Image (cartoon, rainbow, N blue to C red; front, side, top):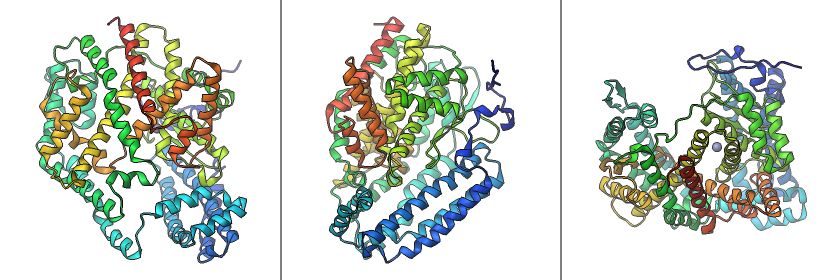
Length: 615
Ligand SMILES: [Zn+2]
């Protein structure tokens, strides 16, 4: 019998990296054996960048030179992954390490050179008539591999202006970020965080982190109300400034859309991924029709919490108290079990991730915070965690494992050019893995409390990653339409739109709180990346739809669903995301796909009602 050295994190104690047993730390030797090998790879990339310049001016000569240039691009790309991640993953182990930070910056400088040395490439491809490249691709199978890359490059080109127009637009680049930069300064650097006194006499400064923690843990409704009102009032006090900044965002988006010849700002935002605007419109419309399960959940919360009035500040207090800790050594086996429905090969890959140290598990002094999955081409995916034995940490692990399996399957099946995938599909496997894990945990939960906590976790993730994000997308669409139709944008109009949305989504199950109408002012996404958040919702809907197939009673429907899902993962970025999803049986243009989420939420709320004995 072998005894393994175990480790468990203890609150308030931050270990050094050396104090953590090796098996909980990732093994980066699959990327490079050591720094010598890294230096050699760096050298090779440096040379490849130099050599690439020789291709300039040759692409139009024929299939052979074009293919050679594409392959040289791929070689540079593949080397770049290894050179970057070997340095950057080690930097994240302990960000205080200046030597490694210097190497990481060395790579960034090389990347900037790579970009300069290949900036001529796309314009030169685009200068060859598309029909001619098509003829070459039809005749040469190896060049044919690049068909989608070429077609999508030309697709993007449709809205590129002539040289004079592009130069003019490029001059505007410097002030495109002015609205967000100002927003960011106003909400962080120049923000005076308000203080409040709690019912206990304790004083709290309301940074966003403190504010959220208070709403999630403080059982005194008056304290939550004070925190909520004070926090939002600091935005209301500057609402005219926020409205002016947001108007800047809207006008900028409309300027670019019109300059490039798009009919609307939404068309401009969706063109790159070739997504029809009807997808976003359908998402919003169907979700609005499916708000009943959301309201049912909040009626349940009001009753269980025993609150006379129920307001937006009561949404985050847990219904069930259950202090369970989840030891990492146990959880790995559960995650492996949970993916059994996806077949043995998939399951074996998940086991390998645990057994062969693809994961850096625990927090240590200097380590980067949060969690991620790093897609290291030429090696395998790596996962960084700060595992602290909470239920959230367990689901984070399941989530990152979903990303990692997507990376693994895509890298195995696709040529380099399509190995990466877009954000539009990225959150499908991560949320699907979470759903599979939830199913297993619910089955195995030993007590009613534990089932209650699990159900609430699942429900909260649907309300926050789906309903809230659709409501945000709804807001963005309506506000952009204001400027498209030459309507004024003031704090009053924006407050009015937000107030109306709250009532359309929550109806009368949440009591009115006047200051809530200014919530739009504290959502950074609106100011930094317009038309982005809807993708969380479409991913969530896709994954709910796929789960319906995976849970089907009929074994052959299930088997078919698994096969289609795995082929989605294997497809990487080889086509437009809508096409990839359609082949997996998910059509986001169809109302059914979106309403799968409401159906799932309703089932979960019904189950929670049952567990809590409330009907
Ligand atoms: Zn994710």
